[in-house]
Length: 226
Image (cartoon, rainbow, N blue to C red; front, side, top):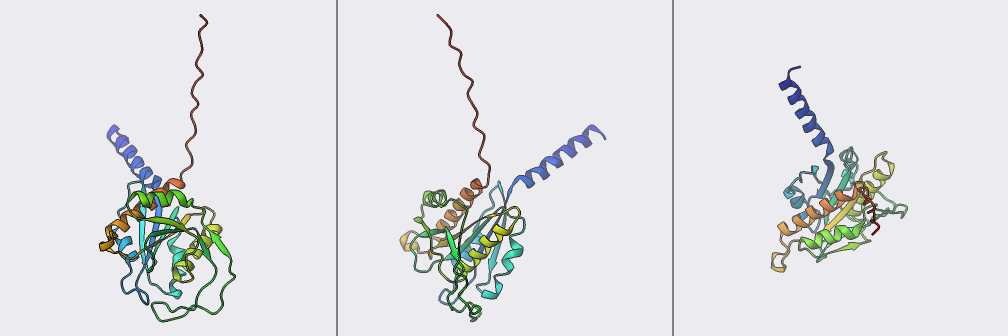
């Protein structure tokens, strides 16, 4: 192989290695559902910019009970899953920490109810540390807080499915659900602000997947005898 060929081969390895080294991130949003004709989570997912340290996958999901199983295939190979939904009556962004295996008998966007049965009531908790995610959203200028109640609708059901998939996986992903308030420009909550807050949460969550850096010990100084 010529010197030029070796140089090109090394460059190709660096390019492929760099792509492989980026964190695979899945971000999902929901479409409209009864009472919410325009779902901001769908628009936020579409607006997200891919950070250089991530391989971002975006997916808008139909707000239907029957569509939940589609999530399983989307999670394949990802290290981080951020699920975004709207909390119509909230005035701040919420980092959800838990999902409950229970569903209200509420119709979805197709007018259908979930399968009968309230579920086991089991609580699934995210392995993500919520405090840094809340702080990241707040630094973007959006009021935010941790929440232990993701409701009993499709947001909760999707989150529970993601957390359950992580528990089964050989290499589990880190999952979190982000509830955003409806945009209200008159109150300083623009769609662009909410998008920036979700981007900040994603970046903070990616940091949590990285192993801690080893602490370098400083060499002991030798004192000279006077």
